[in-house]
Length: 279
Image (cartoon, rainbow, N blue to C red; front, side, top):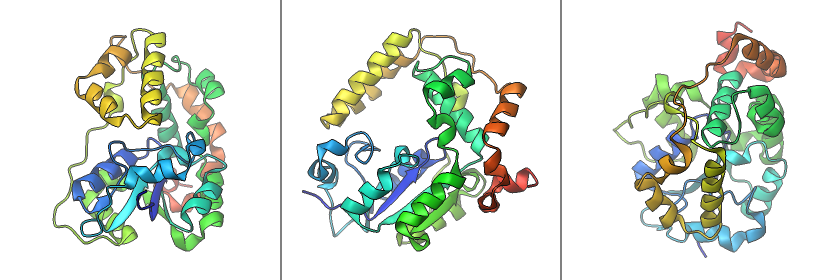
């Protein structure tokens, strides 16, 4: 069946979880889902059952792996996720990546735009995909996860540390997971939003996502990864205009109003953006 995770990086998306996953893969002593970064079990594929989930970790090797981990940013603002994780995994370690709420929301919006799911109006996009801002509500979701698993099991990582001090960030991850200290530091990957483009046709991008979802549910990850290596993503998600929209002043003001509590709440002292904003 497979060994189940002992720790989860629950997100949110666009806050450095891809870098965390790449780092854990590079180490070689952490068991991650085979063939895929995220299983989406505790949100999209809950009905598939725990055996389906555990099969992603059937390659666990007790001689090589120190921990079993899933990096799953989609779980962060899912209401049922903490209870489901407790039910199937027990009180595991929970990690949250903290990023400036406005910056994270804008990056989330650009991500959806690349897949043809939204146009250039972020306000209309939020109406269609509330997670663009909801996943930035740390003052709501962090206490919810802390209450479910206990503050001793929850750790907040700072997104800015990935860029400014990757070595220190790696030491934090090693300490959090109880991993041996390595004497090398992984290079920080380039930021992806600078190359975000719009697809040539939204229906084509949506078709690509549907096909990928169909294959993932059936664990045909090799086919998905093979298509990525052949750059089929350019067929589905590329070919449109290449200019990346900038966050307009009026939209920034709107986001500041929508996310005002994230800068004013008591929990904001935990995050670097509270210092930058002089809160």
